Image 1 (cartoon, rainbow, N blue to C red):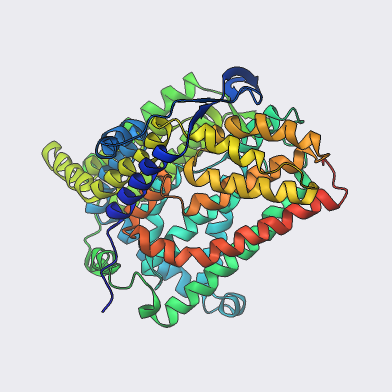
Image 2 (tube, rainbow, N blue to C red):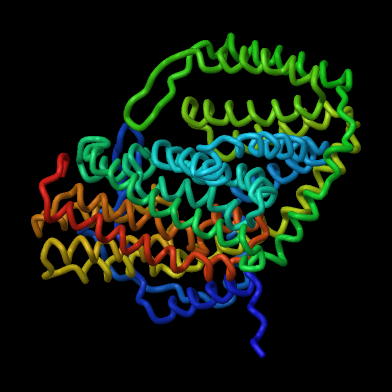
Length: 531
């Protein structure tokens, strides 16, 4: 008889207790902070020579207040999850997403008759294309928090294709973080790290692109292999029983849905067109930033025209297709907002909240019914929001205990007396370890690069190699660390228990971390452009 596996909340609470215990044994310490201009943005970085020991602040009863403190720290992600959950529940009530998935699957069935698609497999092509797309988002503009909004779309699609919720999360979250780890132009990691290390912005691009290809080839191959096993025998999935939630949610008699368009949908269409026209007048040109380069073009007016043209045939077909059109252009404006106007959690949450409201109005739902559906959606997603707050308490305990800087100082001293290969390897291990505690790439770059970059000069190691060690160390463990609100939120939305996810992804993590180390060796042993 095996003991029952602890609940995700229990696992995270035990991690909080362990963090509190460490504050009793690890001496307190801190670096002095200073403000530095990095790529035109003020960043708080540490003075590498300023470390000094201070009194630690042993944590006791604070383990019980960690949920409150974690909620404060992760408030943005928590509200994002609740607003997206409520908005999508309104949309789901219309059965529009079911209609869209059914139409998509019918389309793919027709493709299966073609020789090329039959040989390769339509589903394989879909998985590859979706993963490449999200990996590019992660590599170019650092998509992370935004993946939460897509998990709730792609997981039902993966279930409908005969896979499980793990495949759905891999198509979005894992793909984006494969791109994040092998970042090419990510301003939040590479941009900040290179700026602090006084390197030309986004230099070493060629080798980073090679790394992106290698890591994504390995990642996509692994997901395709797993997806094939689940397709052949669904019981192999560790999520087989739990995914009953998604299978039941998707069992709608799509063929019997009454396709119609309420008059209200036309009013919603007209109202949105007017609003978008006003925004087009206010923002006639948008500077879309990709890494250190940018291009200016009328993104908002073009998207408005496209929405207007696509909306009419959708309305003529049925209100369900108009709601799908709303979803599609919500994603379009999300990309414009993130890349052109630096949108973050508040703007993203507001966008999907508006999408849910307009979807309900287009289906002629009254205000009370829309409110009822929104509350039901937040209830359904509440467990994900709670676990994000609890996970945020881990970092709060470590910071309040005054031991994070001591841990950084100790591990940086461990590199003394090593050669180039040994130093870059230890840097990689250190960055990987620190990322388990501090999942924010921007914060970790500001914390570690002022120490790592000058140290690399002492041993004759390229600062570019140091940035690569940070980059890989920052990326891979994002897929497993319990302190990441984004990971915990994505798993919560997909209904995947953290323990099942860890057990499933650990072998994959081991492969990625090993390959990352192999990819670091050429930065020391070979002459590479930018290194």
